[in-house]
Length: 367
Ligand SMILES: Cc1ncc(COP(=O)(O)O)c(C=O)c1O
Image (cartoon, rainbow, N blue to C red; front, side, top):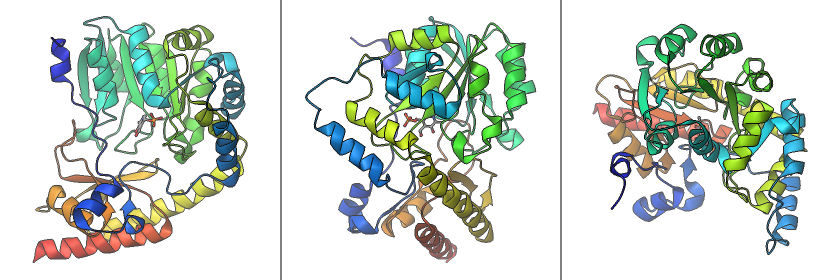
């Protein structure tokens, strides 16, 4: 009854949620520290909440499907004309739309691993031939040279920068050299976390002038709107218009579009939150290193940490859950052969609690 590929694809694993921890371990919901999904730990500013309430009153109406006002605000923020922008229900929908627009059955798609699982998922649903580019051997660096070698003849390549779960950010010059060396391939640069890294390495503005470069952005991370589902793509006018043609007509709810627009009008707040995250990322990194974990340099709002020899990520993750801390065990993901955790940077208080709990769990493990 189903297409064969439906049996092959793995459903998205959204991990453990705070309510699961409360139900299973009896930890009160307000005591749970959720650092598993790379969300912002801070709530939206009042202006965004007010915009949501205001838009909710008109929820009986469809949103205007061209989302022109939102595109203009995004354009101003990114520094590109609104005609170069396509929107979607999170960056995730745009990964799907990009695959629908460009991929025929058996087209080659290159995906570095480890990385965000939805690239393989949506490419497989197009019956594309997915090739994995392993990065573990070179400290998870994505190097233009390797990408160009493997990308020869590929229809599409995904380059997440910063990458999830590694936090590695590619340099703009390296990305542009890939786009130049592979003019017949579509290079999709996923910049969902770029605001936590070095914005000078973003290729969003470059994408307006290159037919084979598509840049994805998300409102779920820096703008802390994961619950409202807003993302966008920046590309040449022709590519942006084609993505717009294929996406769902009302992919972003009126409430979410209003929130995203209000968020873009409150950049100082997000800048402040980002500064806290960057400071806390350094704290968390040094503490985890003190505890004997190998932490990879991260340009995002999370850290990839390899556990000391003999410590099982599954056992440690379970122990942390019992203590009310949700981290992500990423040991099983494609391209990661060792016992690893991914920890999102939380608030100052949360980060101290995470480190305390990891310390206690490691000590228990040694006994
Ligand atoms: C690299 C990367 N791209 C895209 C997404 C999805 O973002 P969105 O919430 O905008 O769909 C994620 C979510 O974790 C991600 O890690």
